[in-house]
Image 1: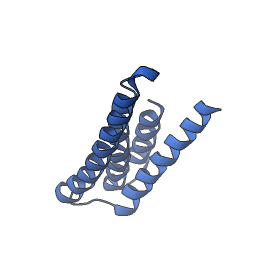
Image 2 (image 1 turned 90 degrees about the vertical axis):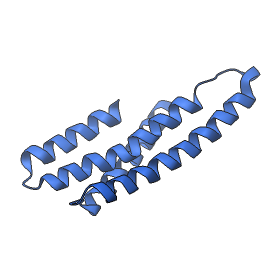
Image 3 (image 1 turned 60 degrees about the vertical axis):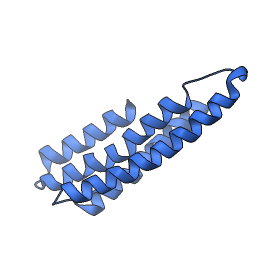
Length: 111
């Protein structure tokens, strides 16, 4: 939720205060390309708990990772095919920034 709120805040600020709507759209799309596959992975990876379900946990983590890679690549392909005025720098900056936000949130939870 924190990632989604940060993405919407930055995308909204760029939309309302920037003159280029393609820039803000590219930011939101880049963030969603990272966020949606991460949600899929999290849902799959943490479906089971407990030592008695170790094999199921491993299988769902593999399935989650494969799904994450497929969803990420599909997201990039979809954006590049359907969105004519994509700002590649904004798209990639948002994608990478969302990965960094995710890593910071995980590090904070582990501490």
